[in-house]
Structures are given as structure tokens and as C-alpha cells.
Image (cartoon, rainbow, N blue to C red; front, side, top):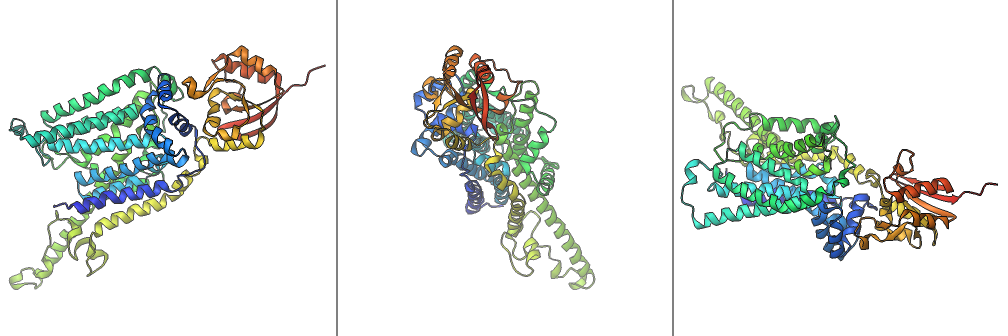
Length: 572
């Protein structure tokens, strides 16, 4: 089949526009949650202050903060905070489409890109001011560059037999091969610096090369590119290993982890989940037969390792060393729509072959009952184009004539697939709409700041319990304007910390001794009797407030408690 460039361009552009439209819908939720607030306040620091911070915490997100620094310098706002993720998600949808078009045909790419765009998980992280959508874009780009580099390394056409390894290579071909692998290694390096868990994509790519039976030359070049990316990652891995307490909140994956991830990748509604899994099963039915030529990539050889290996490895490791969260494997989502689109293509071709077989049988019957001279089949038995011809190009035949009898419908099969994806999108609209509610996030710091502005007066003292509760004041300082942070010794940007450096326990006791009332902004767990902090300053907060003050008023919001304490009346 001859693939026209305009067809590929349309197949890539449409998912980009759809993903952009879905991502723009409700992008200004009216509040940041805690992780976004960290991005917002860190990226707005000076470059030396960001560099100072990364030596003690959040090194794994260092490159992302540096990339966000110029973005928020132009316009520090919530929409600007999320726009890079939106652009990355739109780019990922286009890259998934480009992969499908390259490995199969343009309509497979179009379907895969659209499926990615309408998946609620993709839409969720398109509106998240964190690095995960950018990591997904980097993985999709590196996978596409891998496919191109393999083609260039194998001498074009996707083949790479042993007899080609010793063949003379022209200067231009050698240059294209070197450039291809350098581009691949560079994109992988940037991606793993955005988040080091993206290094698992190298396992998926190695499995792809193994399934495609790549020759030694391809393995050698890939090893060099992957090794260079690992060398770039090594310093970050060493630094972040000393900051392992940042993921101490993670727990070993439970029994429902795989099912939740599956629903996140394919769609949470049963109406979408069932057909989606059926299409993936069709794509994987004898996925490598008829045998592809040695060194030839296909959708299953690329998409299946991408979908399975990174989540499987991270979940397995997390049973002993908890590191798993679904956001860390968002990039593996790209494998699911590619497989589903390939399954839809296989289903279409199977239906078309069945239609041709039925038409052949009808023609033979009519011919035998008096069709052409001598019992030959008449014109009605003309079998038409062969089963390998693209049905979208048939004039008035196949699926097009079945939809509109007697009238040609160009690209009818493609449009039917797009209609099915549209129905999937409509069925998931309630999920997408609910996801745009700020209450769907763990907390909303804008609400906390607004509550503080309504209840606190200038000169009031505020105690954050624990110190990370200060994030609401850092993200939305206007609500705490005029108040006194009673425990703060050194502000966050100056101290090289996320939430500031607090005074010692003795000094805090002295400061609290002179207060008759204090506002406590607390995490819910911090007010439970079971919580016993290791930091002595945090223990003094609990002891003094609990023994010398009584609660007078309270505002509770998901993730945060705002409580006014007044000093106990002296006992007679």
C-alpha cells in the first residue's frame, strides 16, 4: 500500500487537536493541589535557589523545575503552570498516531492517537502541573525515534538480515544511522532526567528488539545509545538515592493495583473496557505470524513491551521496596491504544475477507444457474479487489457501499472507527467532567487560603502542623497576608528547603508562651493521637498546643484542618 504524506499528516494532527481541546476544557480549576503547589513555588525561585534546593530534596524533579522556571517567569498562574503538561499530552497523542501510521497504516495511527486523547488518565495528567505528561511525551518520542533508527540501521525498509551487516554502507546512510541513534539516545537521556523511573523504557525497547529479531549491528548501536543515557542518569540516581525519604509515603501494591491500572489505561467504564480488551486480544492473536522479516517492527512488537514491562517491573520491585504509583508509569499508557487500534484493523480485514468470500460464493452460484456462457460466472461474481487492498480506497464497494448502497463513501472504514471512538468518549464524559472538579484532587490549597483570609486578622499568629502545611501559604500567600508564622526561622527560598526552616524547640516554647490565641493549620493525621513526630520542634507544637490551649473554632476541608486555639483559663 502506498502511504500518502497528507494522510499521515491528518492522522497525526487530528489527535493533537482533540487532546488539546480536551486538555483545555476546565484547565483553570480554581486551585492547586499540594504537588502542583510545590512546582509553582519552587519554579518561581531564582536559579541559584533552585540549585540549592536540589542538593537536599526533590532532585528527581530538578530538570522539570528548571524547565518551568522561564514559563512561570512570563506569567505565574495556574493555567501557565499546566500548559506545558497540556502541550506534552497533545504531542504524545500525535506521537502515538505517528507510531501507528509508521508501524501499520495511517488509519491505525489515527485511531490510536484518538484513543489516547479520549482516555481519562491522559486528560487527567494533561491538567497536572507536574512532569508526568512530559515524561510520557519523551517516551513516545523515543519509541518513534527507535523505529526510525532501526529502519536506518537496517538499510531501509525495516529489514536487517545478516547479509546486510557486512555490506558497504554509503556515507549518507552512515550519517543517517548515527544521527538517528544520537537523537534516540538524547531524547531518552532528557526523559529519564525528567523522571528517573522512565529508565524502564529501555527494558521495553530491548524487548522490542528481541521480538523483532534485530541483527547484531542494531543491538550494538542501541546499546551505545542506551548506555550513554544511563551514564547521564547516573549522577541523578546517586543524588536521589540519598533523598529516598520523599517516597516513604508509598505502600506496597495491593491486590487491586493491576485492575485499577488496567482500567486507567483502557477506560474506567465497562462499556469501553470490554471492547477495548477484545481489540487488544485480537491484536495479540498470533501477533508475530505470519512471521515478519528479520528486523521488521510491528505494532505488537513495539506496543506490548511498552504496555507491560515498565508497570510489571515497578510493581514487582515495589512489593519489597515500595516505589509504585500509577503516575510513574503514565508513559506506558501509549501501548494500549496502539494495540487496540491494531486489533480494530485486524477485525476490519477479517470482516472484509469474509465479505469477499461470501460474494465469491454468491457469484459462483449465480453463474452455475445460468450466468455466463457455458456456466461461467456472470459479471455479478466479479470478486473485486484482493483482500489486501485498502477498503477505504475501493469505489462503491466493501464497507462504503454497505453503509450507503450505491454511493461511494471515501474512507468509510476509517470514519466508522472514529465514530466508535467518539461513542467511547461520550460514554466517559461523566468521568472526564468529574475529574475537572477540584475536589477530585487530594486537596485544594486555594480554598485553605481563602478560609484563612476570611477567619484570620492581621497580627494573628499561625502554626503549621507539620511544617509542610505551610504549602498553602507559599502557594497562596494573599490569604495569610498580615499574619505571623510563629515557628518560622528562615523562609523556604532562602533556606534551600521546600517549606522553610523552623526554629528550635526551646525558642518555639518561648514564642508560644507569649500568645493568648493561635491558628493551627494542620494535616488531618497530625491531630490524631497516634501521630508521634521524630522532629523535636513538631513535638513541642503538639505538646504546648495540647496542654496550654483549647480549640475555639474550626474549618475542615479535605486534606487540611484550620483550627483556632485560645489559651486555657487559669485554674483556681
